[in-house]
Image (tube, rainbow over all chains, first blue to last red; front, top):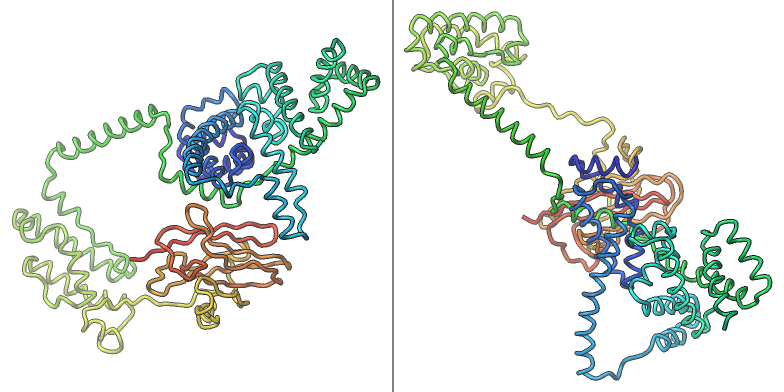
Amino acid sequence: MDDLEIVRLVKKGETKYFEEIIKKYKKVVFGHSYNFLRNREEAEDTAQEVFIAVYKSLGSFRGDSKLSTWIYRITINTCKNRLKQMQRLRAQTADELYEEGDENKTSMVDNIKEKEEKEPDKSYASDRVRELIYSRIDELTAEQKHVILMRDVDGLSYEEIGRVLKLSVSAVKSKLFRARENLREKLEKDDVL
Amino acid sequence: MKENKECLKFKEMIMEKADGEADAAVLGIVSEHTGVCPECANYENSLINMMKLTSLMKVEAPDYFEIRVMEAIKDVSPAFNWFPVLSYGATFAVAVFAAFFLLYNKPSISKQDMAKSVSVERPLAAAHPTVKTQVASVKATIKQSDIKAPEKAIQTAPVVPVERLLAASQTQAVQAVPASASPDVAAAVKSVQPAVVAASGASIENGPLKENLSMGKSPVQPVLAPVAGYNPNYGVSKVDMNTDLHAAKVDPVPTQIGLPLLDTDKAIVANNLINPNHGDYATIVIKVEETSVVKIIIYDRAGRIVAKILNEEKEPGEYSAFWYGKNDSVQTVSAGAYFVYIQIGQRVIKRFIIVNKN
């Protein structure tokens, strides 16, 4: 059953078919949310929020664009909003921590070293690389982050990214190039590349 | 500096090539350039390595995710295009109004027609030819008597008396014909009674029927025949319910259940409405066809793990596990819907259990 057929059935009130949409797009929606927010619980909540938003506004979906593009757009907007909320919360928490004192603050590398000392049998090498990539991607602008995740993790083509972000293919190329250059420079400094 | 600017153009093309979005012309240019420019060749390698690393970030959504969302959207109404709904609604309202209008403004139904509307074709009566003929005579009697004195008939014996009298003849709870019935009707009903009893296939004088009648019960008792394939030994008596150790879980034990649904569904939840306060428990029956890892996990509506019932390799066979409505800390869970995530090898089955604490 194709997306339009499923949408038609859900619009008719056959809510159970909405599960098909969730099954089909949960990997992309949850994956993007997780990679963008870097917090599993937040990602689950955000992905749920995305699907609820999709369900609520399915009536206004006319099929002009692909369902995947539409869901992606909602995902990106929801992620941006959630990140803002999280940053506001973090800022508050950071202020509170600063007031309390900052003695226990350790860097990510220190954490990894500590883990390796405690459990030498376990290899944290790949985890470390993953952590590094995550933290370096976090340092990019939100738009660069989305572009890299969409291309490298979700495997969207330039054209699809353009449709989601409402950009031309050449604009996508140049944004992706700049994002990758930034990331590459950071990872080269970390001796990862 | 000039070289760097030129390389910048090539780097974009190298990126296109690495992404698999370059056309033949771009591929040719890039291959030619990387052959002579070691900086760009290195750039291509580092870009490919970086893309491999970023692709490590792929994550899987949790298995219970769709259940969680489907539960969440139950409370949400979709913002649909209301126009067709409203138009159907308006049509329906008009139809209902028209129906009521016609019903209440219809030329008054004659009392004769009302007498005709008496129905005595109960299944029991209809089943027996003797009863059928006698019921027909009752109808005829009613018609004649009511037509003769319509006002009286409507006042004293409205539409239901024959129904009521027949029911009374079955149960014998009413010994006398109600005074409201006309003498003709009473006589006719008396003549029907023995036939109705005969149709029920029992004797009033002997056996349980008499006891039932004396207690005012219906002589027709439901027969509880065992359902084919159901093993009455299944369940509590055969299972060691060591609730002291694991209030939320019991090690599954093999059962000899021959449930046809189990062959197709591979997992069923018998009694999925439980009240832990009354000691109820849900039985999760699974069928393992080949040796595989079996997981049974209970999740709450928010997708949090409540109880891990099973996570081990099982040999082929049928197993049953029990959930007493308690979490892994042996605390009774709150009322609501809980999801049973069952994984048998690669197959994932989802069921739900409702916990009621009233």
